[in-house]
Length: 202
Image 1 (cartoon, helix red, strand yellow):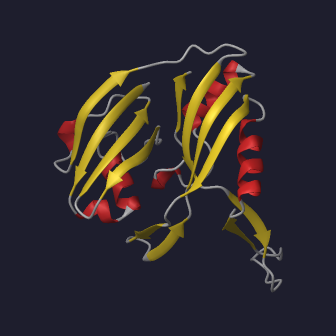
Image 2 (cartoon, one colour; image 1 turned 180 degrees about the vertical axis):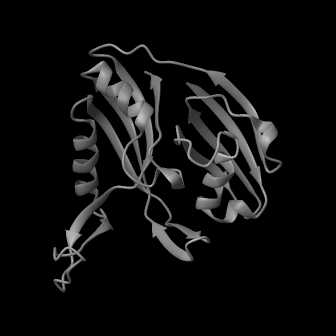
C-alpha cells in the first residue's frame, strides 16, 4: 500500500465530498473503477486542504491541477498476536433506528434511518465492537469533532456528518483481522474522510 500527503487547492476544500472527487482523479482508471483508497483531512480552510491518503495504488499527480501529491511512501505492516500499537481513527459512529411514525418503504417494511451515536459510553461500545475480532483496546481517548457539512451537487442533496476522534493503545488479537481493518477502514462515510485507521508502534 501507499501512504501519501496530498495538497488540494480551490473551492473543493469547502465541501468534503468534492475533496473525495479530487482524490479520485489521482487514479485515472475510468468511472467504474473500485475505490481503493481511504483518507483523512488534517487541515483545511476555504481554499486549502492537507490530506493524508492510504491507497492500494500509487497516485498519479499529473492527472489533476488542483490536487498535488507532496510526498508518498510504500508501506506495509507485519502484525503479530499480542503486539501493542498506538492508533488514530476519525470515524462516523452511527446506529440504525426505525421510523418513529411507522412509515413504510416500498416493500411494506418500516423505514429505517441512520443517526449519529452521541453519548461517549455508546461511542466506546461502538469502537470496541468494531475491534472485537482484531484487537482489544487498552487506553482509549474519545473526542467529538465539529460537524462536517457536505453537498452532492449532482444529486442536489446536502447532509451533515458528526465525526468522532478515537485514539489510544490496542493489543492485536488476530493479525489477519487487524490487517483487514487497516485496508478496508472502519465505519461509514469513507467518502467524506472517515474510517482510515492509522497505526504506530508504541
